[in-house]
Length: 209
Image (cartoon, rainbow, N blue to C red; front, side, top):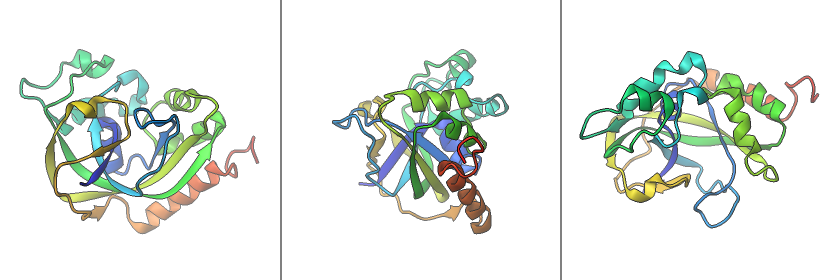
């Protein structure tokens, strides 16, 4: 079965539009141990609404929270603005898969200054990104550099009860090919990838150099 990586719907949308180029992971909730494992190097992007809130997304990107509802299908209508802003969105009956990604590099970091320096490459607030670092403080934070591709025809998949957990990896009961157009051209992606590598290695953070 095709493998999907679960992230907030607003994050998936940003990845599919080239507005975010990485994700941050720590821990392996519901996978049998406490460490995140990069079990797959390419995967489809599964939009989730669990724990997604306006105050955890940078202000300039908050209008995308309402647009991100397009990634779900609710039989009784879309969630209210109250839920969009403050969380508590009921999981949809189906979600739309619009893109897939490949991991082109991965790093482990433990310094909040690096998390902050990576902020041009994600749409969360830096404070929330640091929260991802501070959870399970003995474990390093995994930075996954993702190159996203839009698939030719988005497909909808049914949301299963077990998809509502905090696991990162999901099996999708659909036949999905790894096809499509890269979100960013080669030059643009390689330039950003070089900047991210420099930050993760401490070369572009003055206090760490």
